[in-house]
Every structure is written in structure tokens, then in C-alpha cells.
Image 1 (spheres, helix red, strand yellow):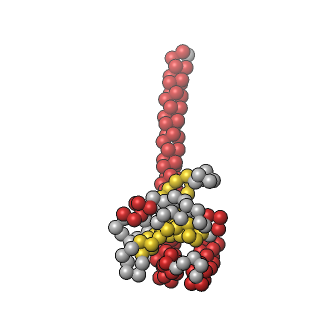
Image 2 (image 1 turned 90 degrees about the horizontal axis):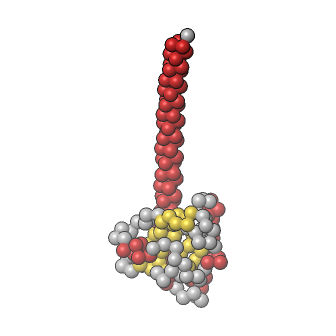
Image 3 (image 1 turned 120 degrees about the vertical axis):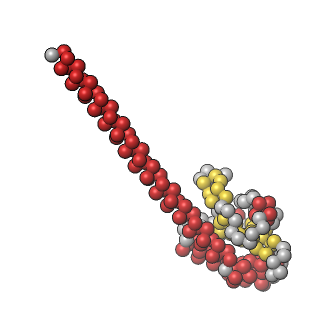
Length: 178
């Protein structure tokens, strides 16, 4: 009787341990699949954001209007007209594409010239590493910057695009989303 009880206990323990190990492996496999799916989903979303921002920033009309804004005196009619057009355009984009919470134009001294958040216009805000943007040899949208907002405490992604003058020689400003 004792031998039978010992045998049943050993078989039960081994079966329990193997079952537990198999369930643990299955759970880890499912977690790994879920993590991979989420990683792919986030990568697709980031790529989509980058493409959308590049489309906005590289649009010839936007580039020309931004140059007009950066090179006109603030009290001129051209500045006021261009400011109104770009502000309306950026607000429309922010309404259509809610992933762009704020679109701003800043000059190389970190002063916000135009923003969908009017409270930031005129302020000096370091929203991105301008040294890295300026030193980047490509004329493409830069790699997104990830950081935690000092205002909201929430994570933010900032995309930047260099704005060149008509001769493509001098950098006039940086367009970004943050």
C-alpha cells in the first residue's frame, strides 16, 4: 500500500511539474507574440507619423510660405498674410491628424515664430537639439526625438525638418511637431 501511494505521488508530482512547465512556456510564447505585434504596430505608427510630417514639411507651398514668414519683417503685410495662412493650415492639419498635437516653426535661436499653440509664440523653447538638426548632412526629416514634456510630464515625439533659403545655402528655421 505504501509503495503504491509513493508511486502515485511521484507520478502526480512529475505530471504537475511538467504541466506547470508547459503552461509557463505557452504563456511566455504568447507574451512574446504579443510583444512582437505591439512592436510592429508602434513601428508602423511611427513610420506613418514620419511620412505624414515629411509630406507636410516638404510641401513646396509650405516651404515657400515659411521662407516668406522667416524673411519678412513682423510688421509687414506679407508677414501677417503668410502667418494667417500657415496658422490656418497647421490648425487644419492638427484637426485632421490628431497625432500632431502641436506644429511649430522656430528660428535657429529657439524662438517660436508660429505655433498651433498661440501661447508659445515668441517664447524661447528648446524643443529639439538644433545642433544635431543643423549638422545633419541630409535634407530630410530628422530622426524623431523622444522625451518627457516638462509641462505635462507625458512622453513627446518631436520631428524636425530644416528650412533652407531659395539658394539652399542657409538654414533659416526648423519646422517641428511636438
